[in-house]
Amino acid sequence: MKFGICTLALVPLRLEQAHRSEMVSQVLFGELFEILDEEADWTSIRLLDTDYLGWIQNGQFQKLDGLDMQHYLTGKPSIVGRAGGVLSTDTAQFQLCHGTKLYLTGENTMNFPSLKLTYQGDINPFSKNQFQSQVAQLALSYKNTPYLWGGRSQWGIDCSGFSQLIYSCFDLSLPRDAYQQAEMGQTVDFISEIKVGDLAFFDNVEGRITHVGIMLDRDMIIHASAKVRVDRMDTEGIFNAELNRYSHKLRIVKRYL
Image 1 (cartoon, rainbow, N blue to C red):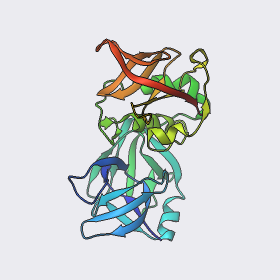
Image 2 (cartoon, one colour):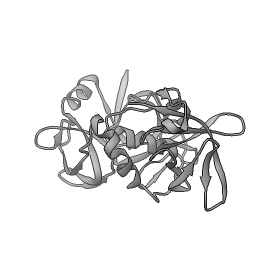
Image 3 (tube, rainbow, N blue to C red):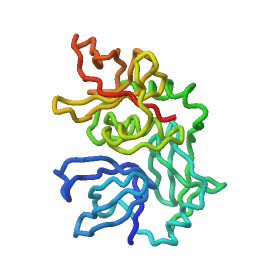
């Protein structure tokens, strides 16, 4: 097996090996992947954390052998906090977005092959036992973030990227897409039993789950639709007051903790 690691803050993951191809997701700095196929300008990869597949442009990552990867992972896993931070080398620096996972030594450096990297900035403070008390506040901090198909950051995010990112800050791992997330967790049978942080899923006219949002309480949901927004939800689905109609049809509510 061949492995690689993303060496830029945030890069597109394409459906096919072309800039015009659909961006199915994004790869954040430090994310590890298996290299499946190599072309002249593009490489087909499988992300190790989520098994997600796509094409990344050559020059946006560094190849790793097994020993280099294990050495990198000896650092303490840390997540960049909401205020973000800066990663520096001897000659350059770049901004890291919230949710980026780093493996840091005691000096806030990384065991990275052939390159010294130092992180300065915010570190995510949350753990699983703070989920109920803090998830709503963290999710609300993304309000008005623009919707971006395949997006995973405060600079543009899609619905399942939003739920995945917020959950990751509480050490809760979710797959990338809404339909995959809906296959996990425990079903919440009644609207009256909804708790903060539960995920609500919505289907299209063909019955396919295509949307997800995070419940703030029994009646209100935060989700990415044109932008990250807060709307009312009932047994029918999400009611968009601006449009004066239901925008998404409720399929199921799931709990993960």
